Image 1: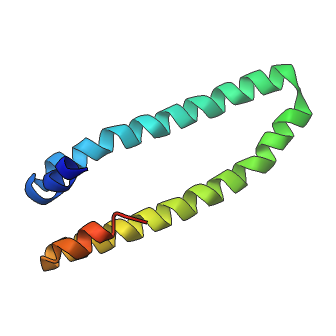
Image 2 (image 1 turned 120 degrees about the horizontal axis):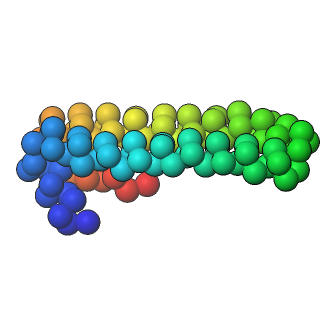
Image 3 (image 1 turned 30 degrees about the horizontal axis):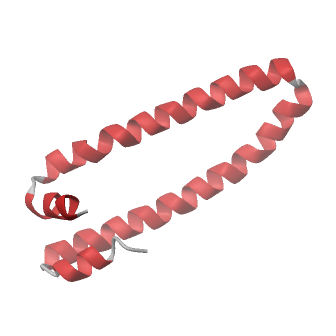
Length: 97
């Protein structure tokens, strides 16, 4: 945790951006592959009812994802504002929920 805090305060923004970008893109790619494979296997194994259940659950999953992104982006904005003001303790306290 200490090295992450030091990196966020001392490294260039571009380097930190790419440090967090690649895991996020990889995670989204894996989620897309999961949904594709889910459709194939459930479609062949369960049939139309299974696909309908997946289609009903998909908007709920999307809403939960949207709420988590909302909280995450708000926290990142709060953190960035605090770092810009020079309030390091305030910024570090925003990382803890």
